[in-house]
Amino acid sequence: MARPKVFDDESVLDAAMLCFWRRGYTATSIKDLQAATGLTPGSLYNSFGSKDGLFLRVLDHYVDRIVRRRVQRYLQRGDVPRGIEDFIGNCFDPSSPDPPMACLIVNTATELGPHDKAIAHKVQRALTYVERGFYKALQRGQGDGSISASADAGNLARHLALLMNGMLVASKVKTAMDKNWLTDNMAPVKALLQRSAG
Image (cartoon, rainbow, N blue to C red; front, side, top):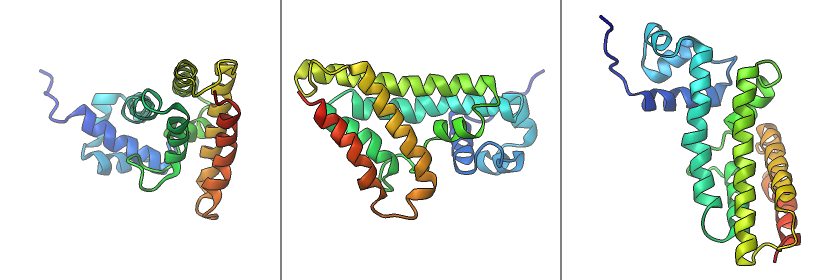
């Protein structure tokens, strides 16, 4: 008879997510995951099949736990230009409620995206979700007049997503070197939104 699980999936996925987020997939060992989650290697393998299986679950969990909540918090309510600025800028703010460790999705795209189709699919799904969040926010801004009705919301959403993802990649080395890095790099985001203001 199968033994019942004695752990909560949500807590395990939270702990594994932070472990992979801090270390990256390759540098994270089963011992690291065991220490982070409190589970034995046997429990990890029985529940998730493999380190790769756990990581795929973690990517989905990250989208639900971090990305979706940030989209709801910043892009689905309130002032649209300010919400977009906050959505991007707070990725790099140590006082933000989300850990400022760049983005697990962007980190994974640079580490594993070119080499693993299953992971690349999940990365693309997450990136598309964020771009769609920008698009819907911009459409909402066009509805309330804060974004020009003549602006191409789809094109602007793609530009914002590319700017944010490029900043996330650069932040892995730049933020520790230059205290003005965030201000300087948010300037193009603000300029883009100002040019598109209603």
